[in-house]
Length: 187
Image 1 (cartoon, rainbow, N blue to C red):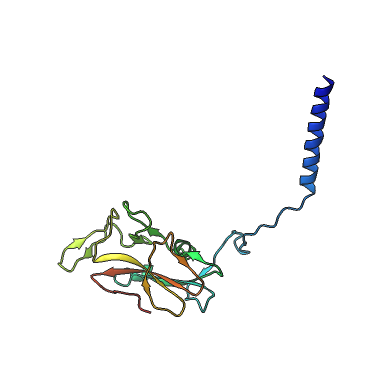
Image 2: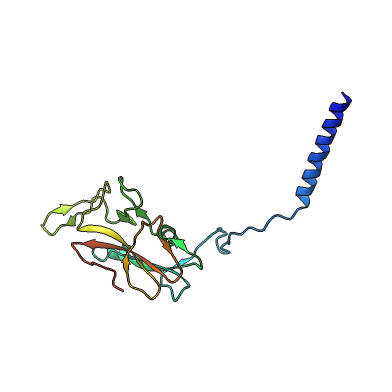
């Protein structure tokens, strides 16, 4: 019984010592930045203007091919000094995307709810098309993802929004094309 009491006493002393050491230690600094205005960690700020130089990533949404383009089309500067995934840049700019049933978020079907499921999209043959987001959008009515390196030219993104990496100074655009227009980003 003496050895049992001794073992219990040593365990209690060890636990007390660990608690004392833990209380005296300084916590490690939090490596994640905090936005002072919102208190959000890892907050990325977006403003409705293109970025200048390498102050961040420029995010563009161009729905000019649709009638409700003014409600959706805009340009933002997502300030960051590190690489960011396109989906995170869209999130920072408050741009919501919807994928398809078959391809998930790797194929963009709607941006900020456009085109709506009940919106008739006119095909060149005069028929109406309604986007249901089941599979690939129609070849004449679709959102495409474009990237532009700093001081470079626009090109189709080689990856989807969830994996497309962007460096400060680069731009990303979601462009809606209807019956071939516009075929590429404006600038």
